[in-house]
Image (cartoon, rainbow, N blue to C red; front, side):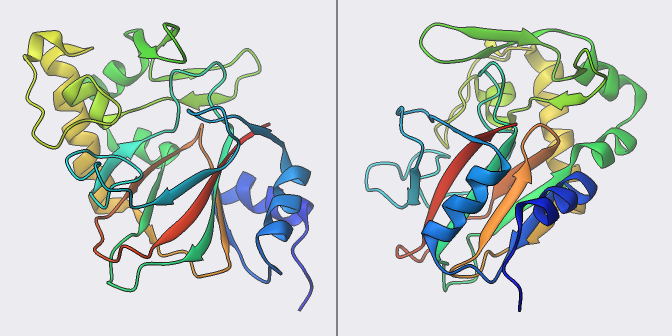
Amino acid sequence: MPMPRAESVRAVLEADGHTVVHRLSGQRHAIELLQDIGRFVPQYTGTVEHEVVHRPGNDGRAYSQSRNTIRAHTEAPGWDPSPRHLALYCHRQARCGGGHTDLLDGRLLEKLLGPAEHALLTEPRLAFPGPGAGTVTVPMLYEEANGRPVLRFSYNLLTAADYDAALDAAPDPELLPLGRAGAALARRVGELFDQYRTRILVPDGCLLIWDNQRMLHARSAYEDAERHLTRYWIAA
């Protein structure tokens, strides 16, 4: 079988918003393919690789290095720009039946929301916390100057005022970024996400890539502490 090429991967990403790349010869091959697609962007700790593994001490949070469910979001919504693509290289997938990466196309979400819900997604400007004390203040869904839609969303931010929220977080609704209305929208998006999501359990040695400015993603809970993926952020 032919090895995957960046041109064909880009074409699938443009059409579908995501793709699972098979027939890789290892992580180094995955890195080379991603470098042909775009430029690596430093992540929260300043490194271009983030190990998505269970780390003790995170069990009370909805965080990548916990084993808990993570609700619908786009990555780094407070970065300017937010990463164009996200990629997960799978070293070892969970063997327990959990640990899915779930995706929902923002284009479908727009069609599913009612008029008032869509207005809340596109009209109020929300301050998304970013690196240091910076913020990006934009609607959750807007168009760039070239007409390309950009989606920025965080269930946790709207319902708990924190990207990596504690599982028992219950802040005063008046302190939430968009108040009760924003929390209600997050719950509605969560319901639609659970109903219409695409569930992907990335096979060992394969690479999942998706358009982070178009697709919502989430993760199901898992028990297998040997699960190990490496995450990359990629600029256009």
